[in-house]
Image 1 (cartoon, rainbow, N blue to C red):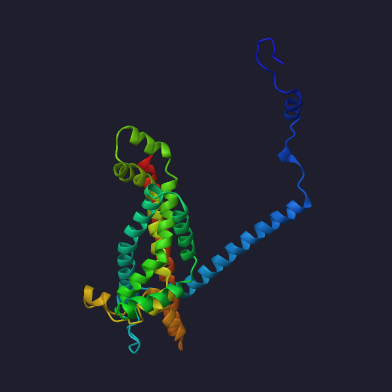
Image 2: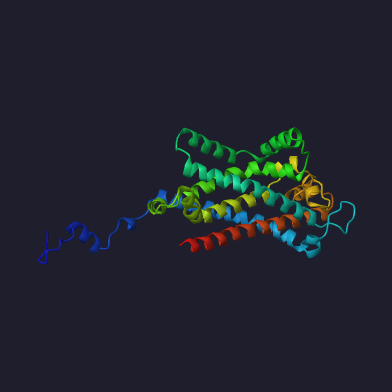
Length: 310
């Protein structure tokens, strides 16, 4: 009922309910809710403890052996004073850069086509379903496929280039799906406003949609970079285990070369002395630091681009 000023009064039962300080959220928790909450908190705490324990164990055993000499000298299985990882760092950078130069344009263009040009029908759904399936395939299967197709069929032999092409197949699903989600999240009002001003479709995509989605696109590329750095199974079949220093760019990409993860695997597998295990732990520590820096870089660049588009 309206009061004298013509304003409707609140519903009396609701007003009394609020005035008495009662709320549905203040109800006493049931025993089942308490048990579930304890189980959820306990599981989360256990995951954090296990993760911190693994990271701490690797860093404690490895950081003491990381030095400038370890990072800047070549590796030799016979000479005790040459146990550096410089060739492996260079080979890792080869594979990261070449793979991203191949995979990033293909993945981003594919996502743009699927979200902006393709008719949303069965074909697009089939492509997205296939992409999600590919992202869940074990990397060892990509390695077997890459060895059969690139190393044998295309006669690239076991080389860094064959490893790059194999890793392109591994990271394409990640780039495509993450970029798709970023493009879809751009408000449609941006495109409608640009179309109303007479802009063409390609101009709208390149000038409005893609810049707004750039933080997500960059995150996809950085995640793919982390996948490349941490991959070992797919590269074991395709890039090989050679550890010689590169003699030339084109000569090196057509030659075998082990990455940091493969060096970690090889030294740990053939560890017969404590020194070999120390090298493995030091290499693992360098990998952890590298992946951490890549993740931080992704976060900082995403925040910077978000501020730039606001």
